[in-house]
Length: 624
Image (cartoon, rainbow, N blue to C red; front, side):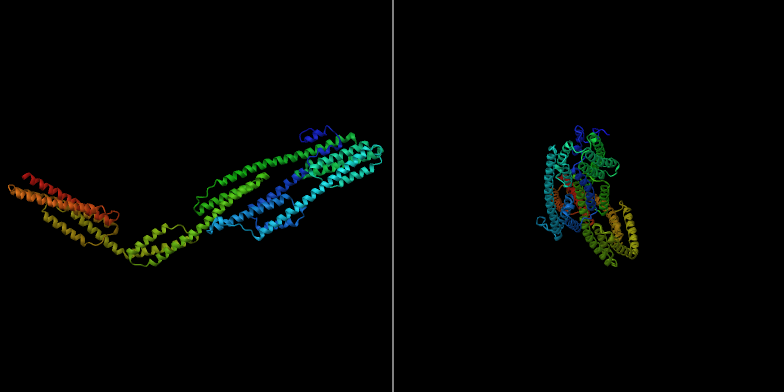
């Protein structure tokens, strides 16, 4: 016999050890009818959670499947419909309808409508589902009320039987003659159905107490009493054997439920002989404790797994919620992020269930994040398709234009147009893979064809332009070789001859045009400046000679001085005009840059003339 105070025996059983009566079983059962219901609910929860979550995860929940499930419940007897099943179906429908309403609202807004003007609507199927769910709920409520009333009536009948047994036990003088009635009352008690779970243990304890009081006062012949005790002992021994065998049952839930049935049967069996009551009860109690211990360990392990799964699911939710897909701008980026989401969903499916309280909340949280991602992806792809269509239309228009111009022989104008089209092509966004290569090949083929034809047609022109470039460089070289020590007239004649020769030479390659012209102008200006310096020096010498001749005539000197000042004032006005005009010119274009240089050259020449006039005035002032 095991020690009832050992680990695994309930506290109630340890208390009962102090009152070793056969009827003490009511306080020692490993679970009341509430415990059985809890076990059944837990097992049903595992199955129902699996079905609901898997269907949701695989996107199998449809309005048609919800309607079919509602009809199936409506066709069942209220006794066969669990409250949990009804609640889960209603929750699945509410979640599905909420998602459908949100999708309809997004479509309403995307169509350009006012969000505040959106009105929720329900389909005929929605109304039918709600009607069926309300019908099932009303039937369940009516059935529950009927069941409670019946349990109350059963309790009243059992209490009446207990009172009658107590009355028979108190009539000690006639207890032998009432034995037949006593057995009838026991059978009647056992045939009565369930009572409320909160009353079950109490009424059984009172029934056992009444039976034991009657048995203790019973004075029938020893053979009948011994036979009754033996029959009860044999029945309880069978129950004990089966309870001990349950310790080896693999399915803990099945073992626990079977144990409840054994306890119900034990309570229905009458007492055994006083000397063995404690022994057989302790054995049955210890066998029950073994099953109860395994049952408790099973659910503690389940709670540990649920806690671990809950932590894992929270981590997955946080992992997915931390993903930033607001900056994704390409198909490849969205595809890469989609793989990340699918991996998270695969990891989610590998985890078992969290606690009943948290499992649905976590799944709703995870599904909400996934739904938001796929909604954003769908919106991006829809917008991108529109943008790709717009870009495709623009590129197709350029391809059409290029094909229309590819046979043109107006090389300069058409070249500029092709260059402009190529620049515009680069500014247009991407096109879908289906059309991208085809439209690009059309445009590229037209461009290549035109420039190939231009190359063939202008190959002779390029040779002529290269020859002209060589001739112009030769002119520049000869300009640099003019002897500045020879008479000025001879040097100017050589300069003018080379300038005329330059003008007779034709076009040079476009890319060399400005470069060679700038070199030419620089050399010409250098020669002119050098020749002008020599001329100015000669003029100054002549002026000094003239002043020396009229040195004694003050009137002539004053008139010459006034003439020079008037010329200086005119030069200053001309200088101001050039400087003002210089401010309106821009050097952003090549033509503008050339005019700037020309204006600056004239300004420098006027300043040089003013300096020369000032020097002449100083010479006159020295003679006055």
